[in-house]
Amino acid sequence: ELVLKSKEQKLLCDERSYQTLIQTEGEAVLISGDDRTVIKAGEAVFLPAGFGEYKVSGSGVMLIAANPPRYFAGIDLGGTNIAAGIVDENYKIVATAKRKTLTERSNEEIINDMAAAALEAIENAGLKVADIESAGVGSPGSIDPDNGIVVYTNNIGFKNVHLAELLKEKTGID
Image (cartoon, rainbow, N blue to C red; front, side, top):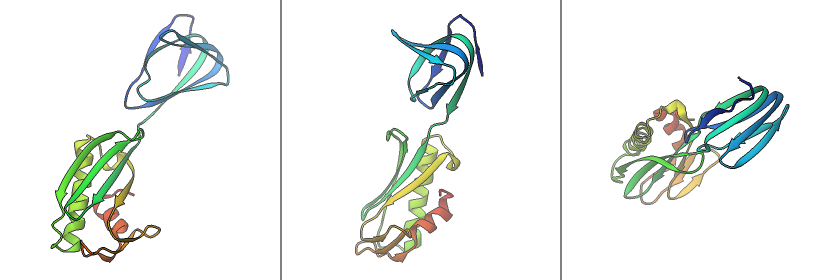
């Protein structure tokens, strides 16, 4: 909660979070460079991540809700490599990790490496598993996407593998 007085107050909306400014009482002015936006009681303004430094002035009470960034994991299962990556809500790649697939191995060994690559990418991003909102997997072959099952791959040897369930168990990512 920010109680506004006529004096300008400097604030920052950095690269890692976005903000919502809610004017609950009175009237405020949002100043960013040469732009000025009036915010009246009951109105809200959204500031995207990386908006930068801004100033507010006016009277009344303003609530500033800083929303944490959202991150997503992706795993690409290929015949040669397993690649994992973490992206932010703006689809910017934050970190990656990679393993050789080595298709002659068992399904369990390959899935363990998929999980390890995802967890390494999370660590490389400086995040925790709890910071990851969801994950997706790209795989060759026939897929049952509704149930998270790899029905068949001719190059990796997966047959009716419940990949989504197994990866969730091994990584803790929903």
